[in-house]
Length: 377
Image (cartoon, rainbow, N blue to C red; front, side, top):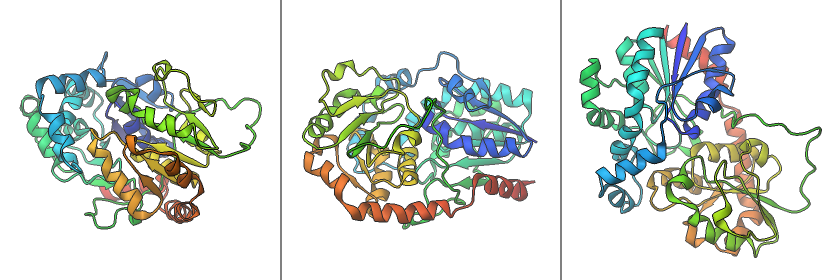
């Protein structure tokens, strides 16, 4: 069987697809990944990749949305929490450059199944084009609702060109465990989170455990490019007054605009997150679903400090706070006392261990893959 994996350009969207892609390959199925902007990083996962939008730039897309819809960002920032379908204008803009080549790939390769991340409506369109089943991989605690229909309305010209309507997925695979989705509509079947953030050379031996608490600071793969490094200033200032070591894991971001860092704050550049968190006491991050789950897998509490302009991340914030596995605060609210609580509050660690056990009890990617095939073929 041929399985097309369609990913939004962000690595935070691609990484949660890797486990299922590996599972299909391990069962002998052919897999191709359609992605933009990060084709080389996707290929590093050992998968065949087609770049469906050469020269793609997510930052340029966001800037274009801001220019063409000047009231959009302000409207979203006014809401205490935005549903994912409210972001249809931006999600459609992210998808639009990928549609033409994804459709061409689908027509040429003729997949039997399309698996796509929650934000990649283009994957649903490819499945509709070929008349094959689709599987959606949810990214966080977001409920999809009518998001794809709203995105399809924004892409109506392309839907008409390719003669498709936006279908609903045949199967949805959740990311967050059931106890973190209480009170929201159930969308799909659960799957164990298996962290993936790329490989890394560890040297000739594992690093020794840190001598005092170590806290990772990571803000995802697109947050800082979109909103700038200034959101880190209060956090770094507070960290300077805490007896712990803080590690900036900001990917390929140039950190020189941050200026001179306090002695207990260092930068490590691009590092597989699950490897970094192995020896950390806690993590501070932007609220991304993958980071949230990787922290749970590491058994450490987390502090979520999303930029107020990115209300989508507030869904994960609510799930983390309500489940009792972490703290939430806006960037300018971070004080030394909050960081000390993150490090010292044993109740956060106890509940995180409970959720970690829950996640590890869920069906593995291999089991979910077999269930997908049994259900659809």
